[in-house]
Length: 184
Image (cartoon, rainbow, N blue to C red; front, side, top):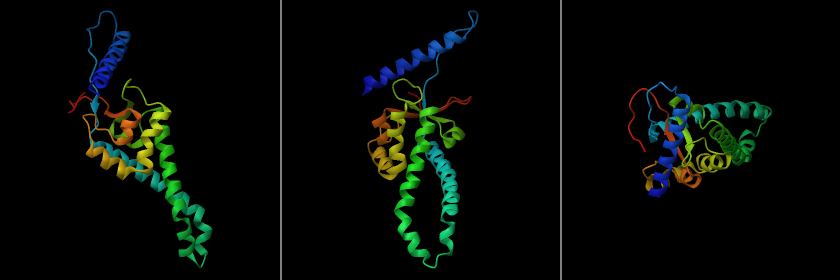
């Protein structure tokens, strides 16, 4: 596992150095690549919470509009009880599609953009491919409590949830002007 991490760090350093050397002018000073900075659990939770609130509000509006005809039904409780499992399934599927789309295209959902964090491939440091993004978001959309608890119990130096490990992804803090804490 440590050799994989070392390989990843070397590969990312080479990629970053190539980017810097290809964009710099011949007379400019040599620039050294920056290190990856892992996103904190707090930043990741706040990003998740922002996404959760945004999607929940949107789904609440949609569900209210779709269920409008049932508002005048005399057996409101019975009609709602029969739809409860579908509500959970539809909500989880929407979250799954939302996170898979954003994390496979830009690496950032709306919450992650606000907090300047990004999901990347562990090996290349690039945005995760759709398959890896789908594996990573499955735990977040359908099994979050289990994914988090097991991730914290079996945590490693890369702060990965169980489904982050399964998809070989990490969540990093995007570089800002201030010095940030943990690096790999």
